[in-house]
Length: 127
Length: 348
Image (tube, rainbow over all chains, first blue to last red; front, side):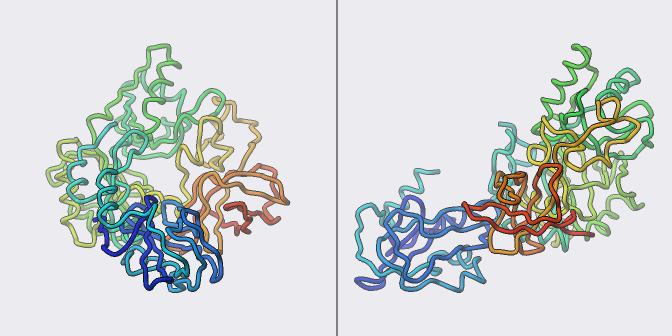
């Protein structure tokens, strides 16, 4: 339950960002987030070219239980969306760390983000 | 917060527990709401619904009180018959919606919503000036719902002769002393068991042992199942300010008894509709319904329907709305055209 992946950086709102190279980043939601949401049925994806800002909402995810905003752990511009989520939103439940939502071109700033160790601690304190 | 006799079982089976109107109950297990929902539609599921309350009216004097507050004609009930109806105030407003079971010639048992149990008891005390004769036995019993098409054959291991819809038996079945009623809240063939707390876990594990096709299910699936079945839930479609006629439940309000609650010439303020959204959004409780740009109602319950793979909802709208004119549901400031569906969403 609630696994945390090394090499990813997290927001306290349970999104992650993973650097691919110096300017490219993948963004998704954590295992804790998908557990809390339960069965995810729709992802309202943004569009390629949209700007995202650190700590601001960029899409929403509907589970059977509720709708939730998803916040961006990075500022930049969207260069790709994971269109597989249009038809298979349950991928976010099945493999949250392999299922990115958007690919962003931007510059990385770890301040304001938690590394795996800090995020693990943060989750422990939530319990 | 209250807990149920099955709490240790739920927790040892990794249920996600929530505070449901002050009772700690599973919202889903590791299976998740959708698979639990589908299990009930195609196989069988069991639910811990021990938050439901059991109120007895025993003896003629108590029955006379029941006659003054219940919508149903209890004198017309056969022994072992169950009837759906309401506890009503003198002005016809809803205290609760209930199942009424005729247990003996001079006794009825009403099954009330857990969230409303104290309110019903209090209402009876007020109405009968502290001489209320209702007997609250809720703390003695657990309630397990056993729902889904497979229950029809599996039940034969507990009770060989078939039970008609909305009837029950009381007795000892396979060693379990309990009420078995052919009722439910899912729209599927199913049963509900009212059993002493001490036997609850044994009965629960017994039901699971009947077939590996029987899944434990939480309140999440119960809610999506009842919504697909078009069944109202108190606190959502029903509340203290509405009468049964405001929510399209006149069929459960006998004409001969309406005058007792000021409802004989009642003109409803609202009506209840069901609708579906054909876009990838889910209508949720509280979202506004508009017609010609005017707000005409509000969503009372909404969810994703695992059977229809769409957002579905019930809403209360102004009684004079024209159903042939387009309605919209406002979701995050955007209007979505809704398709009205004659309830229930799922017809069995």
